[in-house]
Amino acid sequence: MKRALERIAGLIREGDSFLITSHVDPDGDSVASQLALAAVLTRLGKRGIVVNQDPLPKAYAFLPNSEMVLSKLPPQSSFRAVFILDSPNLERLGETLLPLLTEKLLINIDHHSSNSGFGDHNLVVPEASSTSELIYDVTRLLGVELYPEIAIVLLTGICADTGGLKQANTSVKTIGVVGHLMESGGALSTVMNRLYEENPPSRMRLLGLVLRSLELHDGILVLTLTQRMLEEAGSSLEESENFAEYSLSVRGVKVGILVREREDGVVRVSLRSREPIDVDRIASLFGGGGHPQAAGCQLKGGVNQVTKRVVAAVRKAVG
Image 1 (cartoon, rainbow, N blue to C red):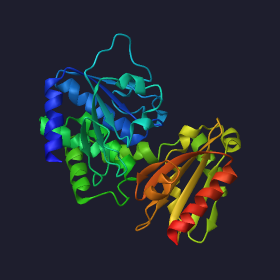
Image 2 (tube, one colour):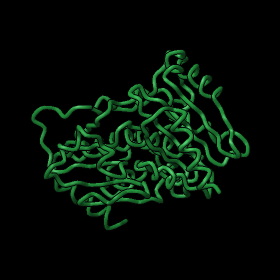
Image 3 (cartoon, rainbow, N blue to C red):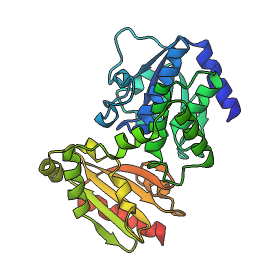
């Protein structure tokens, strides 16, 4: 890890302009790690262009400089290298971004154990809580001051990817990083309020409908979100982020499944588990991935059909 960090720090010192991107359907860690890296580059007198295929979720609009997250490359942009953050493979970036990578130096920073090592330079640390934690390491090595704006962004990314510091990927090191970010001006209470408590009424109405769908099968809990529920709640699929965390809040549940129906007919599946069950392996059976206790995938088909397939795979894995 140390050598990889040093190589990446060297590339940053040598370059002037970089593209920073991440996976489709951006989450808290992907957005935060991108914004933090862009802020670090700015502090060093360099330019970081943040572009994703999908737009910034409204839930993260409170982050400093969130307007930097674009869904289209600005005209006449130039960059010699691309930072690809929080993405286990290139395909997760989406079709519109892949052409931008041609003949560019690819720098892969990620914490997913399923990462394919696709970069010219790879910093892949499955033990890290989040990609934001790895950007913290890069920031420290470069000697950039952790001023409040960077601190709150990194704190948000870490909290978002650890379920509010509750999941198994929250290590002793993670707690130490959180402490340092708080000392640097990142307010943990503000981050937690923004992530988990300041909800619009439409999101709460949607959550109520999803919780009513609860089904329990021998330690496997299933929550379902349909397009009809979105219409009834006056909500959007974006507002259902983190709903999967509720699937483990029932006593005796070993694996939680959230099934969400998209408008285009694709079904998004989020998996959560208690140790030692590895849902990353289950998600990989359907072309997805993630972490041992938090993973996901996308399948085509009706909600009921997809649910049956996934529950069958979970039952087989649980034994």
